[in-house]
Length: 213
Image (cartoon, rainbow, N blue to C red; front, side, top):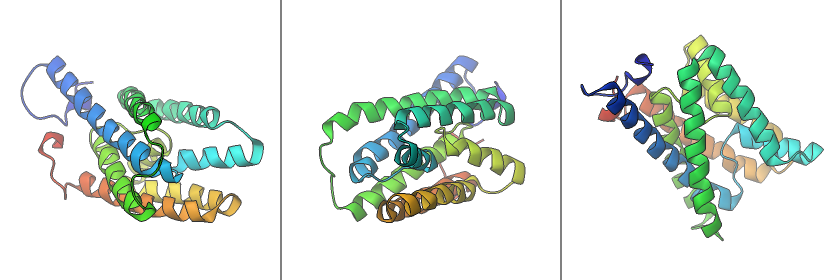
């Protein structure tokens, strides 16, 4: 566990560092959830591969979105325990919960898109990438395909943002062929913007002092 909080600076006690990491991860998850609730979901833009799988299963076999996404996250978290460690899995469950609370708090108040689809797409994609980038940097994720991307990245030593882009793009392209290509084009652009920010944060090009190892 001590290694999992090695990203935090300062001397301070173990509990102080733990609480500080929890606060930063909650804020990052809230940024991610805000991007989804305010900018992406009002235009029906999937935020990633998990949502794409949910759309496919619902369209083909009428599987409820909540059921497919819950099962997918359960499987991915089990994989995280095996490949990334219990600490990553626990922090991921925490972050998924924080993002979900943010979305549930904001969504009832959003009755129409804030702006046009292109403006919201750019803002939402950048905010989404910033939030998820912080989660990755601190040894957590937002669940779903993020976990698969981290596993592949750790095994192959590839940038996690690139892996996430190709994993999600493959799923979203399949959804586009089956369902509606227009929404998927927006989703792919969102993925490209978001994953670029994830890799910028991961490589330290965008310095965030609190996240230094």
